[in-house]
Image 1 (cartoon, rainbow, N blue to C red):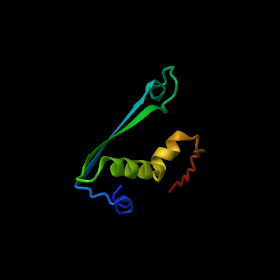
Image 2 (image 1 turned 90 degrees about the horizontal axis):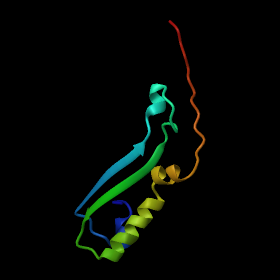
Image 3 (image 1 turned 60 degrees about the vertical axis):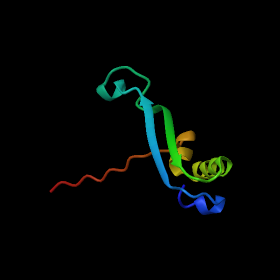
Image 4 (image 1 turned 90 degrees about the vertical axis):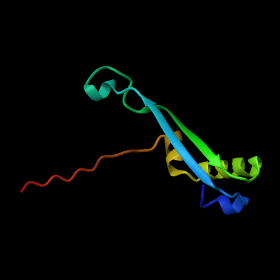
Length: 88
């Protein structure tokens, strides 16, 4: 948000993000379950600013569009594991 704030003429005094994710971890313990993927992710923002609410909301929307994590969680992304094993 800080990098985009000047575009919206928003003065930020403080910004806190509380990220919460829900998932079923049964499969991690070899129990039946839906898998260990997140079932829900919630970003809670606390913004302290003297700027107008409309400008702050526009800034938040812009920052969300530019957030690689938020965008990647919305779409299926191929994931691969590449391991290099070396024995002495």
